Length: 102
Length: 190
Image 1: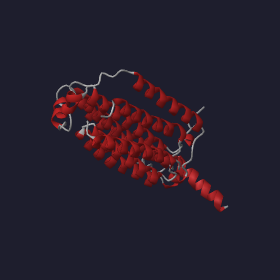
Image 2 (image 1 turned 120 degrees about the horizontal axis):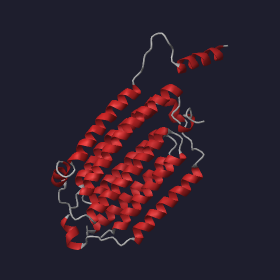
Image 3 (image 1 turned 90 degrees about the horizontal axis):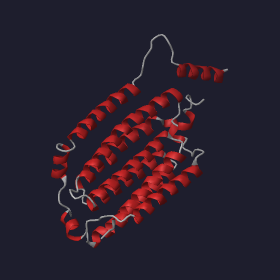
Image 4 (image 1 turned 180 degrees about the vertical axis):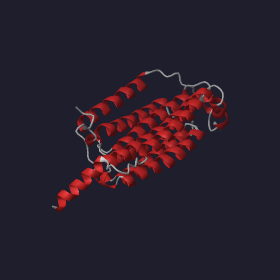
């Protein structure tokens, strides 16, 4: 029998890995991948709570589905922005997209 | 939930997931990073199956490992110059510190809290019962408003992506980056 803490710690690890990726990498595409990792870690949390704690046991699953939906919408839009940035600037590195920097 | 198969499956799948998501950040080549990301998503789908959430596992494989990774492949392929230059930013050390801080904080809370876990028979009841019917009933019942909002969100995301990537062709004027390109080329020729 796996205790719920294992799932929560696993999800915390994945979230931290994704957070490190967002902080430390320059490529906008890799940052997007890290954001996807963080969202998926949250989905693991939702499903663990749904299975272990929820009396109905299904609301968490629905929330995980919504997380996946939002991730799909987000990645579509963000990749559009990356392509636009590459077309304008010939780069996809976030530290070179600094026109708004004072 | 009690069988040793599920316990072994949990450890194997979580090792696969964590190692391949670390390799996403270690890999220098973006395509390799993408392959490891797909592996991590497949491992997560397996973990969802050990949590007897079959529908979400299938949705994870379809949407994350399928379509999102194909979108990422397109993005990598369409930015050929950029995907060569794939270094770290200045924030490596703050990233490590903040990541370890977040992980240890959440892990501490997870271990410290007394979860009101359902155990034994109540948990065994939900073993591998199909969740599809109940999830569908909730989506079109209690969460119907969120369901509709999600569909509007997807529609707006679709329109936004189209608007973002379309070329705005102006016949007479040159866009600034084209001007810069030709300028650079002229300078190089001279």
